[in-house]
Image (cartoon, rainbow, N blue to C red):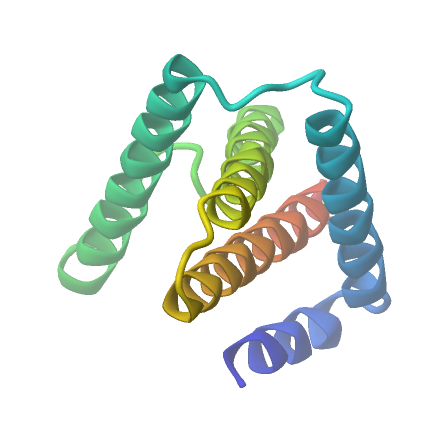
Length: 149
């Protein structure tokens, strides 16, 4: 319902953006899966540490932005702006979200090779779903910022 509601709002403001964001998300998933399956990008421990750290940093940034918007009129610079730096910030966040797909694919592969219990399948599917939704939302944000310029 949340994805549908957010999509409805964006589509109301920018006609055709949902289809573009959906196609962009599918393309990102396909490219990331290809890069992972061809072993071009490997989920090494260092890669995992960097991506998890960046993801946690982005989540803290979003949390601070939400708290600031609720209680003050202060905004996090460039996070919501449509200027060139705002677009670059969104591109960076979209890149990190996309690289999280590599971690999800690696988690699924490890679960299969280790004969994880059924609960592991659900965690893997849930993690992949959350990452795909994040990539989709960031794609929506990027396209809306580009259209605002």
